[in-house]
Image (tube, rainbow, N blue to C red; front, side, top):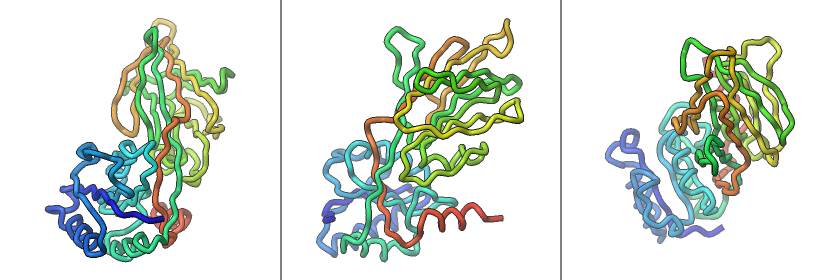
Length: 278
């Protein structure tokens, strides 16, 4: 897999004065490649120019880049400048080795699914964005729970009285889903995870459904004369507010995104090392 053009996305707060980004740029140019440094993925003038995106930062930086690169089949190499770094494949001291692997074509590309959603509280419906990790429908008021009815392909799967419900991709299974007690899926799988957040029941558990399923979440009423109010978050960002009677539809997005795998550390080794920390 030949790659000649590289975008280097550098978080200035973590890569001071873009020092590492400039080192990478010089190394690539020394090997007769073209490279451009941008501070955020939104500042890329022509995404199609690049063959590979190198993202310096943490998982948040990779999430933002994945949204921009989704649908273009331009793989991302994440370089960890953060803490956990589940979406990054390279630690900072191993950058040069990683670049050599890429320059020699010794890497794999892993295609990953994303989610898309629509809020049906208008006649035509309003899109609520692309989720790399998850959509969260959660209570707005700290003192009140919300009731949600979750349908899978028009069949009622369950009703949750809880702090909310979370719909995760396999990529996002190691994020909020994990903290909420949901299962971890290998990132290359195609599935969705439905996880209740702090359910008011002892027998409510996560459910894994096919990536081809269409989910419908209806906001109900926890109390007869009370309107449940909820917020919709996509990968941690507040996108929408909904209330009793509103419906959120979530399904697999047409656009996918690609991650570079160098094979130095497997997903399971990464999981053991990062999740077994004290």
